[in-house]
Length: 172
Image (cartoon, rainbow, N blue to C red; front, side, top):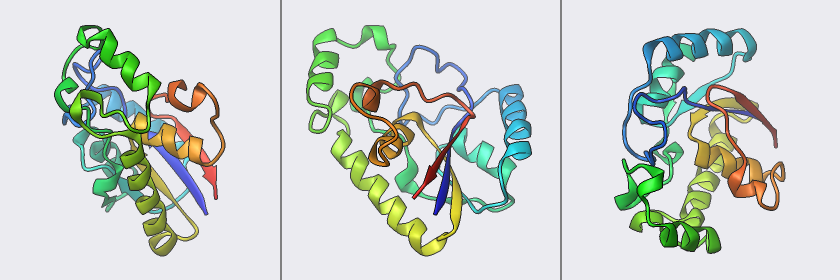
């Protein structure tokens, strides 16, 4: 199965902020440019999207009827949501880095829960799109999917940049 994972375009008012589950919009010009670029390079496959509007807006420009999957949402950062990264207590960030699987950033969701969501998405796609699909999602979930497929390892597993509106290919 070929999966193509695409991170949403940049969000309005998102730079420098922790915005995991916040439903921020994207700039219209960024959305239009991303859609044009991606339509030119992506194959005709079913499209699945996070329900957050920064993903769904792009998904709707890539496919007439994208399927929304709640499991494709970004990591829940709890009380960190909307805060500038620089305003989050350094000790909390260090605790998260020290125990990425169990620590709940801002009291939200841990990486183990994100992994379980990814496994549910994969199982769903095996049934609904066995030849392949395009997933419009978020950096955290895409990074986890790439790591689980063995494409990211070591420190890169959690620190690799996931570029906006760029396709990442998984052949599983």
